Length: 420
Image 1 (tube, rainbow, N blue to C red):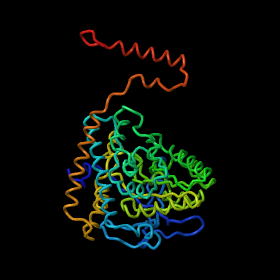
Image 2: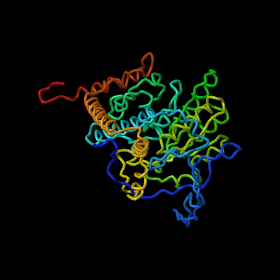
Image 3: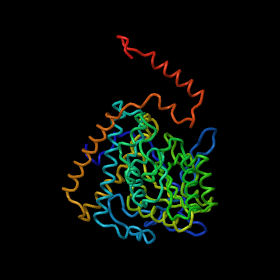
Image 4: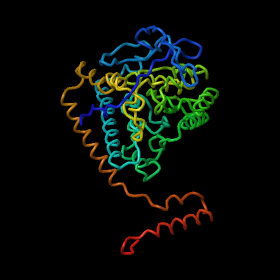
């Protein structure tokens, strides 16, 4: 496969844009390098019970921070250019390499699940720029609270890709030490990591540290009460936390416009801190906006909500079938905005990379795929009795009884020769 290929074509519908402009607390913020255009409001669609569908009232395109167009052209932005002013050709090639290798790892994991080697996999296909851009904006002493799809951020934090797969293979509960890379274990419970991040950020403030915290979540998680509570606490306690929402348009089969009447980044206004929408397929814009938000946090200016407006190219997880709720034309439109192709076009037009660079990276990506494949198949089965360990510090009669029952159950299995 080529390093820029995407998964099989599957989608089925088009998501609409939301009205509004990005604003900070009390002051208007201009966050786009292009002029917003006004659209004629579409007729309201009927929802269940005869009510108008949420988000039916639309008037204008929301402001969007963009530094690289889908064609790879660099555009100016007076507010955010300074955060990427020191980016060199080497840095751009490094960002491209990060995205390509992350996509290759993700594709290999998807294939391994289809072959029965993993129980489940949540693909990040199409979201590489949001994750790599924001991940490379972090300092080593910043702390990350991910969901279960932040494979690109894990790559940026130095977590071995093979360590991400143990949980999905069912051999461990997370294969890395969170404190080793300041990258917390994947969180399956939707939205709960935003509260963990807020609490950790409040602790940083009490410790007097100047580091920051970032919490990743999706548009679907933004509807969870945990996220609203995290917004409240972080605002009240002025916590140094960045809420990074990857709006990939679909919460499994529910489109964003059915979840919110306003663009997601505008929700921050109600809690008293700024929100901004960034082109989630533009790695430079994500790098710049996240740097800005992290600097605010470290300077004691409190939380920020970043909405990375991107798209989930594949299924929600490998157990999902997006052809049941999305149209092919929607995916085709987003494929034209592919984050990897966008940066490649820029590298080529600026003569920052030649065919030798791309060929070498292709070879490196295939080597990574082989390493991941071999590592997964070599993972040892977990100790069947490990589940009973570390439940209580000094043991417990009920746990001992359950362990004995499980041992007897395991012993009941024997081969035809009577061996255990």
